[in-house]
Image: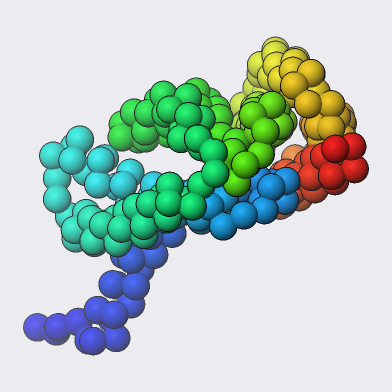
Length: 271
């Protein structure tokens, strides 16, 4: 009878840790970084930095939390469940420390957007707990909740409410058009029909959100123009061949950060 070597056990433990601690959604990294980065580019500050870092910690905590909730929902406790709990506790401690620091340093009521975004996050987690987080509704709800971080960062360091909400709308518009587009492209990649009506509705909603953002703060017009350009690029690319998922993710991340840069430049030029 053979017993596993120490190296095999270490490799297994590292593999389990990677599975419970590292998010697998490549697009989620960009969606998490964009709001915090834009908020800091618009209104730099320590409180905002703490909130941006807290958003990243929350994104990392989402993976072990999902595993714990799914395993609890299915009535099982595995080795990965126990490791996920340990990782989750550590990340929640960091998250709590960052939020506490933000409260101590903040110059504005940044917690109000968190209350507005709360239902979106709850919807996303409800689906996640049932292993249905890849559906359209939780993906859109989760994106809407994450994009609220830009509003919190701007308000935390004394930025105006109209700019803060408008920036949320700009990033929300980008997510609203990009998520259905990516889902449609992946559907094509697997030979499934592409829901063109959904992409049309999503693009119209994105344009409407961008228009409201400009109404709230005219300096956001450059960022909104970037969102429209994203829509045009996506519609043009949807007629060609479908790239590999990794290439599609890199393209979306590039366009997302381009919207962030355009929005920040426009605000600093026109304010």
